Length: 196
Image (cartoon, rainbow, N blue to C red; front, side, top):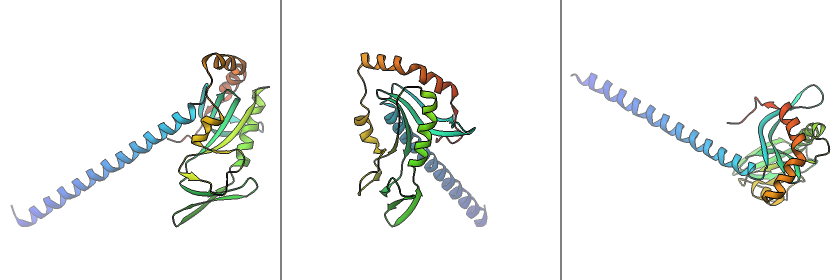
């Protein structure tokens, strides 16, 4: 075997090992992301008597609106817009854009409250007399040093604001809200914007 053949084989072997290592690393990152997402979903849905996730509902004007979550809680129906952003968040109810500072990086996003109000209104049109509320829920990776705007909460505070009911109360609430829930469930469809 010549030296050139040996060098070619070593280069091929090293390249294959590098590709395998990259594939394993990418698979591990994907698995870790998927596991974190499942935990997040489980935490949000833990306050619910029933839950719909990543759905679209009619907006009343011929279109549809995406909902990250629609939950049946002890207080009525709850529309949740889930935000998993890392860094310090500066935002207010009447600000057009909100800012996130993460280390030296700075980014902005549109004020999510107006869209939340539209989503809540879309659900209300089918809820009858069942109360409908909405929350923008940030994971613990996002912090609000200047205070949170109205209708904005952290994931950990969600269970405090919407405590889980005991079995008897849960049955009574579920019976009271079941008709509206079934109507909205029937009208909803899986969203093409679903997060994986």
